[in-house]
Image (cartoon, rainbow, N blue to C red):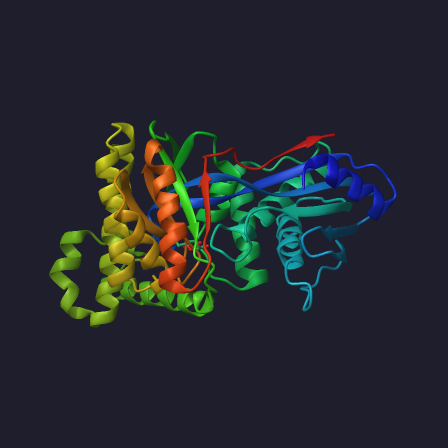
Length: 382
Ligand code: GLA
């Protein structure tokens, strides 16, 4: 649905005219996977798919949101916010409102239609986009009297997800949804929260393949990896794996169980691959960038054990196409999406190969998109 459609829908639902648009994008991660909660480096880009509120301020403390995707209306009072047991998606908005108020921000209620074209539950961060769009909707409802800087907005949204939704996520998804920029990826130091825009190299496209495989294990396995990394950091006597050098790891790997050692191996080398990838992007070395993406996937598959048959299948199909520089799973894993870095003139061949071979090999229908690096969250009056 486009903005005029959503304005009509708002008028029908709430009997008045919408006054603002607040939006935030989903993301893909080019490289730097499962490093954010270890205080390491990540290199995501925001994509041209968004979660959008079309709304208008209320003079009281009531928030009413109608999801155009699900056709469901949810309502809560800012003076007394509870988790909803039956309208799960509304907890992203409730959680953000709760955390903003906890941090001393004064909010006002609003009515809004909520619409997203970030595919849901497929690893493109529709939840982080919903959280960030909610921050922007509260800013919009205050018409400029509430301004939250991009880094704080990401932190609040991450806190909302951790405490209100219950996933021990890192900060990458919220950060890129907040601070992404068109035509750029974003190098984020997840310890200092310093960041650097890195121009996307010319001549290549990012092909996103949604495996349409359910991510059943994602929540529990994610929290298990998180715990294994914490356990390893403790053995090394540091607060996070960021502080373990490759040399120290190789010297002491015998002190870890075989499984934990392979998890740590991934995290440590993935962070340095991410910094190498930034150099490759800056020098336009797409071949090296692709090699690093391939190494990242292989490590996530073999050492971190978060890939899946479907993700590996997409990666194998695309790697076999001339003009594909590299391919890897993106996001937490266990289903969801894979990405391929493809020379522009090879995009059609790569897409056709996936559409022909993936259903034959997996008995599932993929969704294939070319995504372009896009701007982070914002709001504007209409
Ligand atoms: C999910 C989490 C992120 C990050 C990735 C894996 O998307 O929300 O914080 O940990 O998985 O890199």
